[in-house]
Image (tube, rainbow, N blue to C red; front, top):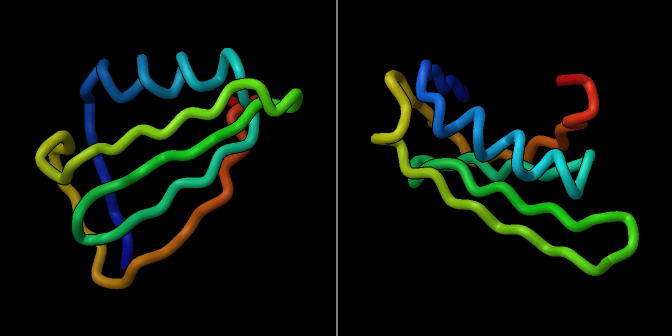
Amino acid sequence: MFEAKTNNTLFKSIVDAIKETSTNVTWICSSQGISISSINAAYTSFCIVAMKPDMFDNYECTKPCALGVSLNRY
């Protein structure tokens, strides 16, 4: 099970910043938190962001998972 909830504006700012260079990102979720990795289409910009569980109002990840997310929908 994976669940993460937040009203933190920092989270939205991180996603908005990544969206400027990459539209498709991979979210790696584990009990340690979420790490986001992305690379732009020209392969000139690579981004890695780590977010610990305490950044979220509610965070639970009982089994590690990788999620492909398309940011151009947000």
